[in-house]
Image (cartoon, rainbow, N blue to C red):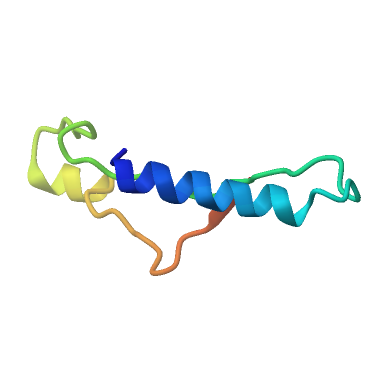
Amino acid sequence: MTEKNKQARARKSGQLLERFKDGKYRFIVFTDEKLFTVEQAFNRQNSRILAKSIEEVNKNGRQVSRDAHPLQVMIF
């Protein structure tokens, strides 16, 4: 963290404390959000198919389908 970032963070936290100094709010909760994709990632190096012929490979599912907009879960 640079010195400029530290100064800006100290200034903003001081402003926040000044804003809520009347004691109306006892707790201030800071949250962070993250989106996780539910669809499993496909890695060709880790997902091997063993077969005697190319026809058997195609029959057992060589193609991997993917959604254009996979499900996501937001974690707070």
